[in-house]
Image (cartoon, rainbow over all chains, first blue to last red):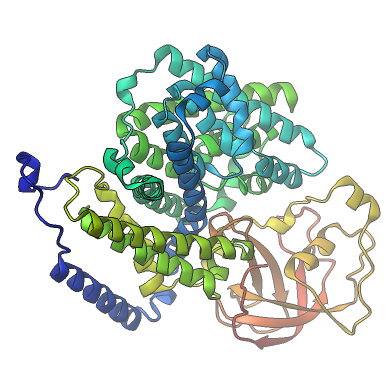
Length: 336
Length: 235
């Protein structure tokens, strides 16, 4: 949010930095007062509002579970932004972008985090001059094909290693397809990468590193909370035991589980166990749940809107959904 | 968001995340293995906030709009308020009634099915988790539970006249992916919903459904004791 400050309109010497001490003190005091009053008044609120209480628990859980991964992604992003020269990245990938897309997708294997980590990393890659198409393929593939997620998938489906293979193949295929689609139809003006503070370099590397982290964290963090709010709402309002009754029909089951994956925004490390518990659904529907979830869900789309702009997220997320479902159905038909 | 308030948001959020990690609070929301990650995250957030304050003071002038965070950044204070003022408990009966009963899913590998179940201890009263109890009730062909007195600990997820339900929640990563494990209890009066209890009783094989998941296994209770909630409510 730009500040309405005289220094903005006229490049006069900037006024001395002054912490708005009164405002700060007021905020801190008001915060503590609100907490104390809240604890007093709301001591047994949960007994009367079990759904609201479950919402708060789930919302806090998603936020706490995601923050360390966001921080991991932000740290890696800062390493890329500050320490890795742009020419290294370009040298690491094939020069032809059509080839660079699948290579970048496969490189997602090295990022052992869930989707919260991949957004800031992809943003940093683009900022360092990596073309958008391979960076987006990396963004989509990384949460789905890393070793932790693949092992979790194998554990969740004992005796059915084809589920893990199908997940790996379908996710790489969908990520590559999205990269190629971006090459063919994507427009640079849809992407709005918030630039880092340019004068950061005057203050040395440590300061530039801290600023890069803080910048990415603040741009994605609020949207992460927004996504967690949406996911918690679905989690509390949609009873999963009721969903099980929809598993009978082939087409409906794929659509239901794909939409559920978007709405509940479960970590990619955990989604295989959730998918495995939908025993009434077809294996292809379970695969769709696991391919769609790490690529497009409310938390991820919200963070994409925060990091790459709303115009981008509004086009990219629905396209990813269609491509991911199509890839899951195709691979599920062949392999499962 | 005002540039000058960014550091305050980061420091506040960091303190709360570290507090959750350092106390037993984290057991209500995430798996125990996330504890170090929460503590480190809290510490890094606080350091980032302090670094921001330091840089702003040293630079000695306002950032001119550039680098200011979007308005959504204020939302980072919402989890702070939720944890500070409401301190939500671990998931209880509301979620247990609406979640999938995960114990009805057979996720044993072929080797485990081949090997069968290990012999139970010869104690007079067997202490089992709800997951262990249900696994044997559903899948053990040797019916090792038959005639054994078991002791289960859980909360009341559904009260009722004839029978009631004992539950534990189970999570993979965080409470958002939690599933339930349910046991039907008969023979003793139902405590209030969400009350934690220790139940002693004997498995009723006749009532155990042939189709897992359609109905939880049944425990004919001989003794029900109300207990305080355990440190970690999840199984």
